Length: 417
Image (cartoon, rainbow, N blue to C red; front, side, top):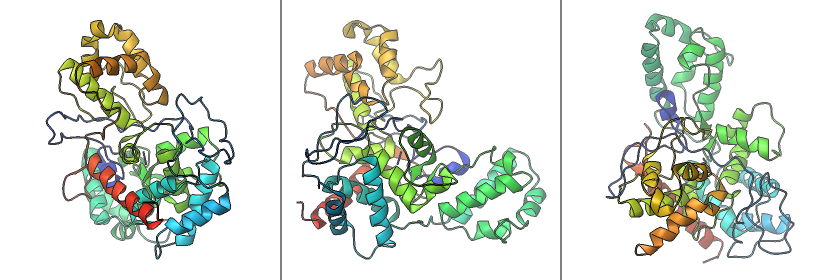
């Protein structure tokens, strides 16, 4: 999942990162932006064979069903389980749990038991965690101490106060200092922050009344996406804390499968779904739209998949702000025969499947296609990924290609090449 970064402590915790710098490609100038939230709909991959049971009703009608898998899906859970057994690598940690949790996720999300879909989930899981149910983050203790110090200075809290508070015994019997020094995983960090916010005298101030960890688990899923998903689609497990579920194997697999596969888009290649997993649903489609606008306007645009400017991760449009893409479109109002208000109306659907059915989308591509070579309907968003964990520059394209390589290996392992 839809990874997500902000300033301060959250930078240390990225699984999917936001864009902050341009890529070498000459047409790209990515801008700093809020990471896109996945579409808050429960839209399903269409079951390919008629023998499959029909999908459960979605919260909104499908404007364009997802194409059937190129290879046949298996007709029942028993056959699907046998297929997954064939595809799941041997010798990975908690292999039986991975198998059971993936099957539960596919069954409840009504995702067909097809090799492409199984391999897509397995490829993302391998990339994000190496199938480790609780993946280790290198230098996590050092990162956390640095961010605590940064926030201490921000709020003018005396160091003696912080030092004394960190010696306090926490609910697990260790002092908070001992727990920070022993940190290895985001799951441990999530539990630590929950206790610090609740118990330390400066906890709510320094962490701004909320846990700064926004994503986690072996598939690095956003907590915000999980909160949206459970409101729209029933979660198959009982739980006391949805945040804790995101950090569990079963929850991460469930929500990771949902954000990756449970939305309709007609991409010709799975690599664009992998890009969307990193950059946000429909980011590959929207980046291609930005490319079409760039061709028509002659203005260099950030091909990052975010067409409008947003105030937060709930995709609320930033009031009174106009993005470079939107300004370029306003300059094309005469050629597109649409007013700025009409275009803004259609642009508000950019995080939804229906955006490709809007008048603006159709007119932009029709006009762009007339100006020369046809514009692709999807491109990998040009985004630089940022995290203290990275020792060299990484991009959304790097992530998508890396996952795609693992996907191809999975398909070959199952004999589907």
